[in-house]
Image (cartoon, rainbow, N blue to C red; front, side, top):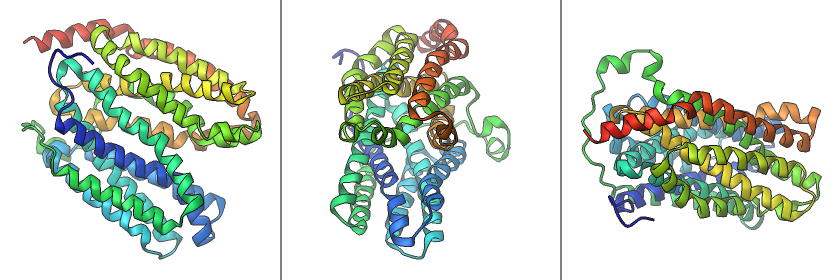
Length: 402
């Protein structure tokens, strides 16, 4: 990290990143345990257990969709507190046993509150990061979520094998309380909102999403759709090819790849532009998926995880940084929510769509097809953003000097 320039690692940046880490950890920890809980406690069917898992993401999408247009009229820090208080309360409601219907309702509302709180953290962190270090700063910030996607499932599977569900829920509640407590230490700089009441009451597309962020958000959607196949089916694939033990370390290796590369890729994006990160990331992600499709031993499987981490892991932070950079400050909340709506849609609906395809293709052919698709999507990126990057970057630099 460069010692020159505006300071990045401020108290507020660290606290907001920590809150994001704890919330994402709870999300992924419960993602790998809640279906088992539904079956064990309520004798849920397979489809009901799947709905218990997936309805959370639907709630998150709706939460992001509506809070993005209201966050600046409510206030960014106030929105964060509202989201965290409700997020912690709904975490506590997992202790209430009123049947599968109540569990489904609570999962939906829990997702809704995560959508509110995480949109607030993403907007606040984009505001407090210095303009000249946006790519680097957002890269470090999204590492908090990347770590949680690796550590959360690992802790969840470990606790489900060695403890009871009340202990799991207690651990999640404790993390929620910690998130709420440290939020009191966040100082959000004053921001004069230019949002008009008429804009909030309207039902135009621009009232719910940021049009400038839509092209790069769509790129995020398609690559997240491809990555969802890894997130959801890697364990089933590992069982099929007898590499279950190696697969247990897959997301740890993925996280290591992101941790090693993110400091350099974020800085590179700020200095040279997004294309210097995105095109290699497409290549690495596609290569990782192709290697995964032919993995015959543990080393190949973990090498695929490393390549996918270098690829998709850096795409995720780069596309978020692009969405924020393209947007005026008073639309930053909408840009952040727009990015996450498309990311969540790809990760949330991908497993359902791909689950319909797998019986006809098998896992190996699926991963090979998606690897080729990722490489092809680099052309989509070129037309939606890549070819315009130089002129957009020049315009942003000109604005910064005014």
